[in-house]
Image (tube, rainbow, N blue to C red):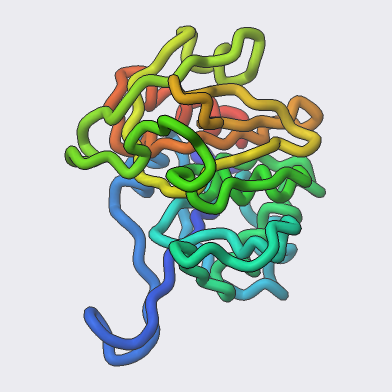
Length: 236
């Protein structure tokens, strides 16, 4: 029996150039640090969709991370991609397969930023392709100030898993996204920005299936670490 639950963490991927002359994986250290601080044992998951089930047979939970890319609208019936949409098909194919494998096994899933949007798609939901084009009077969801600072607040829906975890009706969050969840499918919305943009989803039919649009690994709000603590505890 492991003292620390084994947490599979999805990676970002980049083409050849920059750090390496060959394609490479990368992820900010604070994702891993947040899992470790919460009592988990993080392991990185390379992008092999055919191995998603095998990975999920071994890990105790799945953390789907964010990145500077978007979920293909073809996966949720969104029509042609908006000009501002950036796709990473290999990464999305793997993350969607891994998320579905986790949900099928009822293993805990935490989706962050793009991972939250992917989780909503796995619930059968839909997305907003580009917030400035679809939300009148929208906040600056790609905040101009550093990600280590809050960009705006969110209202937490009463009675949700997220509300039980953070113990508050409001949180300060950082914001780094141009897309958002439009509908949560079979899931429920647990957080909303002042402009009405959905900031979190969850699924009460699963042991722990939670997504947040912000980046709690930065801990810009004192309640952020509680999200990782609850996720890792659910993985025990």
